[in-house]
Length: 576
Image 1 (cartoon, rainbow, N blue to C red):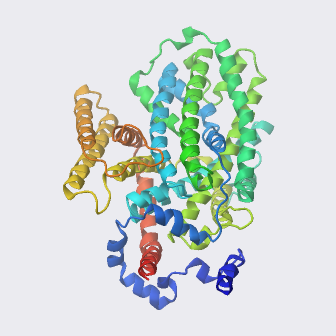
Image 2: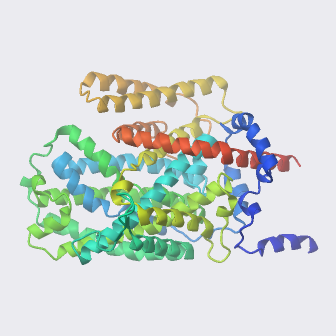
Image 3: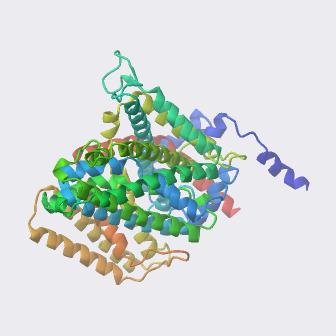
């Protein structure tokens, strides 16, 4: 019994602590002298860690010990379905649909939603296999770390976490704008203007900060409580969506669907690239795998089931709108509200407003959960200070990680206007979806020390052909090349690469739940995500490069040395 006392004292150690050792416990940061020594060894350490891969056991067992207390396994497939619904179905469907139907796709906007839904569903398949096999809080960070190595996982995770923080700040500002416009026809009504600050940062928004603090406070109080509140709120918006679809079709006119392709096929795909953002958010739910009771059953049902249903709902809503109102007469700012007003149902616009406000609220709630857990796993790996990995013993939630993402997003939301935030396009989301598909292919076809060298070379050649031809398709589209010859050649090259891969022996078979039709579905996910990336434009690519460059500097100065110390410490412990 005496031998157990140290363990007991460790578990009763106060959660609230702020010593230097809690932030930087690694050997490289013990003193300035040790840090200088570490910096002088940057090149060999980078060589050691650049392609170093983690393992499922390390992510699931070893790293979870850093949190000291376990997260509570309290979620079922029912919770995951509604968390996905609450995260994905926000205000975007009410804003983007009218805008894209009017400007780019016309009645064919329903096909735009179907195409984007298919692309999102392919990504969901890939996420689901990983989350069911490796049910850990880190989501895509852990998946990429296992298959593609530390460095790629860090760059991808850093970008998507940055984007999530900016997205949360944007949702807070949008919530404030929407609420203010319901009180008075001025979206800046509740903001404080400071003339001494530059434009874009001179409208201070205390309400956005309050909304973020409340949402994150609820997320910190308990996962199950947050899930329950999301479920109640989502029922309200679900009822409104059913109302929109039913009454939309009651007042529909088939003549409004003509012409169906007013802007041609190009308009359909341009709209698909924009409406894709109405499907994002499910990756935050994949981060909840560690708190799921039966991951092997609940995650496939929750993620695949919810995304399939959401795709159908979006297509029906888009079709209802374009059948109610001629696409040329759709109001781009308030499509559904004005559409119901035109058919004599002015009161319906208040239902739409409530649903949009609710969508932003639940997106914030679920986003708070997902972002904190993403941060937790990054901290467990010591890529940021491990104090942010600690799980509170009473709530079973990562309070430090939640406070970190809350503080940053609240500061950004307080100062930055929506037009500044909206310039940060979601390049990283599609990029990481593409990487997850690549990681799945690597998982199936390459196992270290098992896969023969010849098979590895063949696999890498096929993978290069798939990625290269996918980039070629995107480049052709953006060069305004509409000839069928270029697309046919690129398509055949992609097909040959995927076909060649299909003849290789799979080295890993999923034991829980697997993506069907491998390598075809992951390969299709790669080409669709790269195609959508190409539609984002040069600004998004430059932002990604700049943000990645900043993260590389941080990695070389801090993250590399922390992870190197921990990896070699774990190796020494294993030998002993």
